[in-house]
Length: 285
Image 1: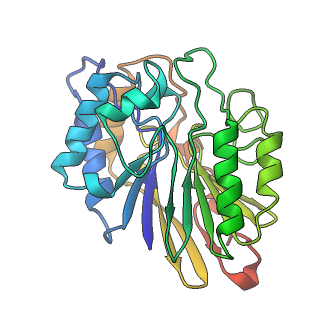
Image 2 (image 1 turned 120 degrees about the vertical axis):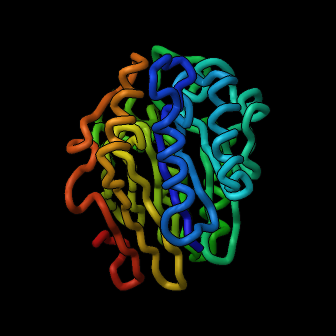
């Protein structure tokens, strides 16, 4: 199974600039069309900048034009829910089997768990949270995985796991119940997130934490290749000065954004790729 993921695209409908949405169209064409075809294409939140219906419908129209809607998945970010909850935003752009921002895909290769860690209509508090219903969902999936890899996809990181996650509102807050549930994991587990706009890969116990940079700060994505007995994570950073120029012009069109220079968003050498194999005991390489 192959999964390609990106995060924090921040599609903006309010940027009245000469470039219009040229960056988003060019980036999404690369994301969906370059390299080997993936089974799933995934956004880890903040697909939109202001969570407006116009933004949802416009960015999904681009995805539809590329013929990838049926294999595209989206977990909400805090920007995506600035104007309405997921029960409304999913009428503007739905990606089943995710509903109300969370869901599960159970396959022979792995268990994919999608969590909604975001508050609704909360412009001044962009920190993460997780309710009892989703905690129970994760607990059940960890118990039923039977040794298969469990891949958790959410917008926010856990505290003290990835770049900036030691800061308030840059992580899941009050994470103790979640951490307690995670301790029940028996097999290899991965937590994939965005939000902080900086590439990071760390590990602790049988959990590996993978944070991906914002696609508009650093045009990039990650590729997950899940094979019997191994999981390989690789990073692809686009090398196209014109695309970076379009991204910068787009960023100039709106405020209230955590702007990270590309050189910082890239992270370090060990934050790019990882390989899990049983004998590696979950360590990155």
